[in-house]
Length: 206
Image (cartoon, rainbow, N blue to C red):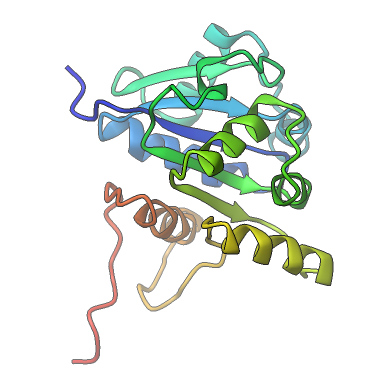
């Protein structure tokens, strides 16, 4: 029986940095969370660009795909949704969740959320979290930020969205790329009060 009864929505947009989503999924599934996953249409192109891998569009095949990428065969519970299925459970406020995290989050997604536009399931699910007053966390992966980006991010922050840029720290003396990625993922999940990643946290000066 799953220890975490309400699911968490993981949205994956077309920004660079799919490793953030993969590492988040690895630790969440291993910690027995139930995940409702939706990847945007453009994320398929990012997989090709970053890993030369084609992500399958069919939900059951995609579930297997994500489990293989995360290296978690059976733990937790994972449901994948087609990006265009705006009639899915996560598109309704009556479907209760722990909240939603979009990681990585493109500036296009930020812009649409900031003006209340939802043209696919990822954007609709995020809009639902906002209207229901639930937790929404975004991990933007862009540099530099333009004034338009900053204004859109400010609008979301004013609406209650937690903005966690993909900026790692070095005080924990990272040794691998995964160490850097995991720090960002852990800080993003902190915003949802989820602590399932064994990172070295700041203990203050000794």
